[in-house]
Image (cartoon, rainbow, N blue to C red; front, top):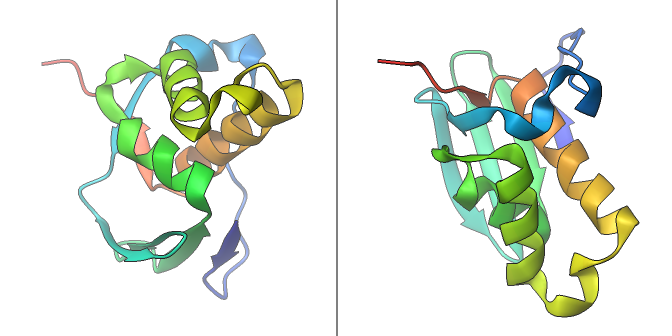
Length: 114
């Protein structure tokens, strides 16, 4: 996962202690993306930020639709990546870190209740 924008940034910190797992996050309308095998390249044009995700990050990005909790996104991303990685604590931590980075840099946002 690589980020870039040329500016200093103080990300919002999300941890399991503040209910990250139960939050409903969705992709921001300010993000353009393109497939960059084996992953995806994201551009938050409102903030001038870029983020390149690997294959696992790409899977997580696809599930961040505002209809699933972060815990569900993690489980589904790992299941889509293959059964061997679903039980790995390191793999769970990696996806959680990806989601935290996406949120902290404005690529995803908490779903607005209508």
